[in-house]
Length: 551
Image (cartoon, rainbow, N blue to C red; front, side, top):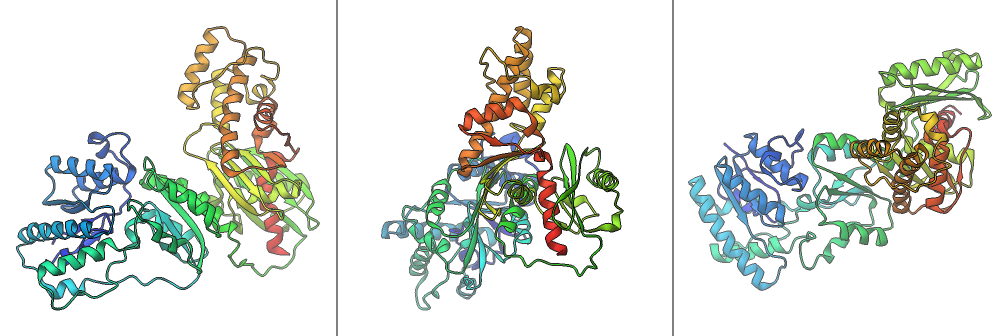
């Protein structure tokens, strides 16, 4: 028997159950949108495309939609034209729970009952209707909550695994709250539908309702310990609520955005893990160790370089190595660690604990623990200069800005990891286009004469601009300065988003780019602390955590 799928909490699933329907929330995250992109507008939101992709793959034959936004309207029209559905129906749930709205919804429920009953070939079963009501019990235990736009099943599972406390999905359809009262036993069908319309409309409201103040109870819950606020690409429905929650909620908040594909969820793992670490709720799982010589190693496995720092028991840096990552994170880590050990004359068994961080941290088997680069860069920066409150790290594949508390823990952070724009990889590609090394590029641009602006941050388009400028015989210094301006502007926007404050430190290999540092300082209106250990900052933080484990 086919399942009847739905996508909105205002869907009358109890009514469908009364006709023998087996209902399920359609919330899968596909691998991609190969089928959906052939028929849908490019700017259709990721969730709308995921519905189309799942249906067009032949996995859904019965679907009841609620006309809550332009995306759902488009999806309905496209599916109706596809001819692939056995049963397709759309309800128009209104924006309030007033008497007129209830009357209109009751009328639609009766129309749906007529069509669905005819499709199923069954009569309305009052007992099945009554049994279908299963009110949701709200937890009283300490927990984290996912709020905002719906979150795909796969992403929610990944979020739950990453967090130190139970995670409750309070997003969109998942906070359905119908059934707080039992259906009236002696009402006829029309009266029953009028009661049911009121139950549907008086739920904890979604953001499309005219009066959505009732949503405050979610983030004012005394047992709430943190919020993961999720939005979907090309959907601005929940942006207003996020702004309000940031101002009013007194718990840590992480905002993430997905395009509703499985691939996008992988990009978010670092943010989720860093947020979990910043909550400082995890008990430190320390292994019983026999103290060796009192040396501790941190390995930062980046997409471009692998960095290793070894500390002694006084937390002094005795070795620091920077090597190209190469083809594999694990192999690169082994090589870099061996080089660091050789530098200080130690053997592997002399190291009491190893902590890994960075892009390839989970692939490295030599580590005792893995910690995100967000937390490690914060710890390393605080160690190098305890007065630093904002860390700017432009890495090979992403850029991040981290706000620090006085003790060096993470207060807040933002990342740009959706493309190469504003990253070390962007600069590497531009250097290649200009036929120079990154070292050469880092020294050029300081003495520019013409203030060139590179209009696009897309690596492909920016490369075309650079080629065009070269053809126009523009000065190399001027072109490089234009590229530095573009990266500085992108980085400054991240600083603004995170609420950066003095002192600022720049970490990572790009911190050695003199032209970019100067341009970013001009953009921010402040000096950046540049340590001679800037590129080792992540590995240093990891080594400090390793020392914590063994001491």
